[in-house]
Length: 264
Image (cartoon, rainbow, N blue to C red; front, side):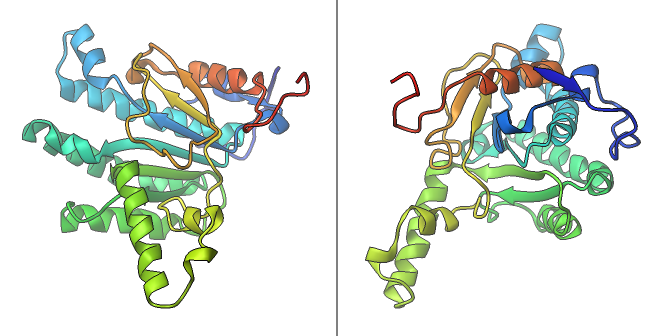
């Protein structure tokens, strides 16, 4: 099912850390357009390694870089990852500060290379709790890559799907109150365009690492008909090989969207 991409492609010079499976591409007719990932298990990975949780988060950042590259090489249109949830603020302050600093460092170090790889970066979620410095980093990343035409890479930061849906509902209620639209005009398309992921296709494949079997308030509206893929692998160990297996598993499924399959 997998075929090798011929060598020396346009990304060959910048994908120096690519491992073998991300040198493969599934037939594009079977590819998911939008993949969402809950990157879970950094802390448990670190504990199993006898290392600090901070080391787990650092290893997870390296994995993210590899997966973005693999997804880009496979021709996936949109990759959305759960980087920091609205609930993550409940964690110990020292861990929250480390996560935000790591996030800041990731943007600082990787933005030039991602830009060179034609990646378009966006952030979804609330921005009212971030520092001015971090907000500038986010804005710089979005503005610098805004015209790129490659994979759309969404990072969900201070994100919760229920919060997103409530914000969208309030926005549409305000527009209706102002006479811009009527309540009867609000349909699925209009509502989707009020969400943080406006313009992106619905999620086709939803991946969660580390063995937990739940959605954790991530892209609930967008994932209404997504195929779910759960793996026991901790996020730092989630390789392009396993990402490729998830894509291949998706390609073998029959998607009915509430209807009947060809077999009835």
